[in-house]
Image (tube, rainbow, N blue to C red; front, side, top):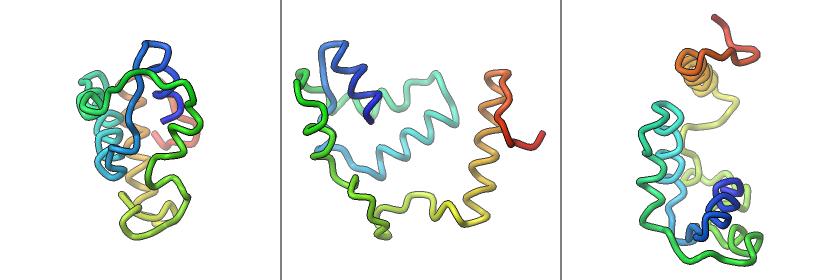
Length: 109
C-alpha cells in the first residue's frame, strides 16, 4: 500500500484506502501476483482514485484492517504457520520464477 500510495502521489492522484475492502484488495493483489501484466490490481483500485493527498502517513493509517489484529475476517489465506498456506506460497513463488526467469531463494525446483 505504501509503495502504491507513493507512486500514485507522484503520478498526481491517490487511492482512497478507507473505501477499499481489505479482502477484495488482497484477492486482487494475489491474482495480480499469480498472473502479472493483466492489470488486475489496477482495475480493482481504479474505482478508488482520488486527487492526490499531501499527508500519506495519515491517509494510509486511516485504512481499515491495518491494526495487525488477526480476526477471522482479516484472514484471507490463513495463518502463515499452516503447511497448506506455506505450500501455496511456494507454488506462487515457483510460478513467478518461471514467468520471470528468476530464481526465488529457498524455492525448490
